[in-house]
Length: 464
Ligand SMILES: Cc1cc2nc3c(=O)[nH]c(=O)nc-3n(C[C@H](O)[C@H](O)[C@H](O)COP(=O)(O)OP(=O)(O)OC[C@H]3O[C@@H](n4cnc5c(N)ncnc54)[C@H](O)[C@@H]3O)c2cc1C
Ligand code: FES
Ligand code: FES
Image 1 (cartoon, protein in one colour):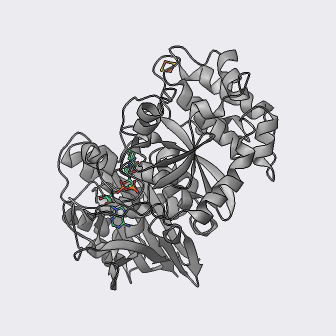
Image 2: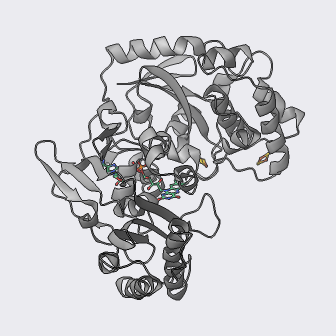
């Protein structure tokens, strides 16, 4: 039985755990304030809030209900636009009407839910924060300026009480008072319910669902997948010595907010903003990105250059496999029967080594890459000790450029050695022409991205 709180109501359901929350909300519960737009995670019309107990504390994040399995709602608080209503308009709803930030109104519940979520999470310090909180929401008719003005007024008028986020939000008419009972209700539910509602008979693994529901929606809604994202034991980021280990249920947002990542990757915030939207990042796992095996997967490319290892298990035995050996061909992976990724580990960059990630898309944000690349390099006394370069969009799989990377090691870091390496790069790639650019363009683009790594990491050297 799947159990969760939907707004102020306890839900217990035996529906297939692959049923989307969106369908449940609208068709089973008739809560039609949550809209259906693209059903692919792109428009945000179906945005909900997900309240979860993490580190013994209730925290809220936004998510697209069209890509969320009802099984992943188990033991959580799901909030629709109806669930934030109070007798009068809430402060967020009022800001939308005051600043004429709604016309047809189709997108408005999604925007309001996202901004409300940012308030209850204390993430509206500045007007930019408040606008950014709605980065997964698209409006087709109002124009974004009035929406930005509504967000700015919230940032200006809403007072954040970091130690009492929910109490502050109730007091300032952001959410209704039943939110104050949710933490204890969820804790009680967690103490008495089974952690995993249903096990798969097909062997299908589901993490965040942000790939599976886009690719295989019809199949998914009838499935009882094995739910990885609900397993607390798989959701962690640990540093032991210099080794960082991530559980398979770690999301992109978990990585973005992790002190370990923030300490070791100085431009993490900017890089993460290049990956989908906040609502997708809140659900999407890093392991899911690896297994999806898209040739342009951003996380695959990021972690390939870090010499990442996967701990694979079939439930009884385990083996370690370098991420670099995981991809055998287009969407073909180095699996043994029944295996899945249990955890991901890599050595954190050496204090003197440098790391950079670059991505070029048709538009900067909310787009998949035409070509992406990461580089991890350690230079001592002008000599390259270690170099790892990865690239996406230039081969059928996310690629580690073995020969090019090796070619620099032991050599002085000079214009000549970098230019020779760039020639080798062209031999290691075989891009195809498609909607994201011609093969020639992608070759040139990768050369420019690798050049950009050197420009970013060695601004004082004229290497090219
Ligand atoms: C609107 C939108 C924007 C996006 N933008 C980007 C982007 O900018 N960059 C980018 O790289 N990707 C992007 N994606 C793709 C997607 O979000 C990522 O690939 C994500 O990391 C997938 O993770 P998930 O947990 O949602 O995977 P799921 O959909 O749950 O699973 C994907 C695959 O992995 C398998 N799987 C998941 N976890 C495991 C495991 N531990 N062991 C074995 N198999 C497993 C599943 O069975 C499935 O085959 C976008 C997707 C959407 C919908
Ligand atoms: S319906 Fe468009 S994001 Fe869900
Ligand atoms: S108000 Fe019409 S789509 Fe935004």
